[in-house]
Length: 210
Length: 228
Image (tube, rainbow over all chains, first blue to last red; front, side):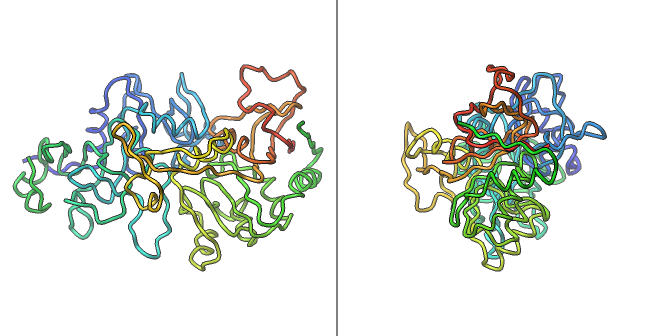
């Protein structure tokens, strides 16, 4: 059996699954790792919610420009063919179904594709949603990048989300250290298990897997 | 008509900014551009803080970073309510403390709905159905409708009494161009307020901006403040 996947291996796997020519939004946090594995020569175009298509890598040294940042407010560079637009246009691109793929982090994903990634529901937590809800319902394919099990060992792939939802039935794939889970109308299909057998993962998640 | 207020040095810049927001009353709703620090009209926000208006409702994507700009305005106690998409950040301690102390109200709006609600206000749209937020706590209590098999929630416009926006260059007609991702909410907010005040680093003569590249036409701009 292969070992569990590292974050970099997961990011590389997501990058491999992004089709040539796709318009892609990478959520803040772990999903930004995917950019390191994307061959932009393949014509993949990165969208950032704060109003840019054709976003490049993180800026270094003299390239840093406070007016040119990504959704995580990190300075980035332009790529040839880049364009800028205002926020209403940027989110129209999402809602209007013009983005092919977005990659988001998650607290929980349910077997029907429900996504919870914005609020733990804790009474003292300050709610902050940003663009997560727009991305979740807007992109043609929503990929989630997360650990399959939380620090407490509980499965984050669940029958039904217990955290407040970000979007309903919107996730198509979940990329984890134990492999890629495809959310299908016929149930959850594990592409290839890593670091555990299918039966062990069924046992630990309490979910029927194919 | 667009009024152009030009500063010659830093002291004068503050006085000019003060003049541009001198009529903002208590209780006003103020749309403030910027995504984090990019596009944040810091000089105008500082002037609004010095103005001392109270009970403001402020609309911005975030709720202040560090201790300057919007964060300083919040710290001054001028703001009764924040409407934003993402208040919680690593450096949003000013807002966090006010919120936890119950000293500020918060309306969290998904970022795209926030932009579109202001766009609707500026475009004279009475309300719109958005798919964003359906089935989530942020749609609770809102009218829902299924159109062509897809679920939507009713969202109402957000109109400002004032918009404070940062652009890059203006001409004397009030036409604006922006710079890179600092554009963000500026063009939308400029349309959505009764009085739109814009700070720019440079003003050029009417006719010097290529009409093909103007992003915000001067019809939306009431006052331009030039801060060197």
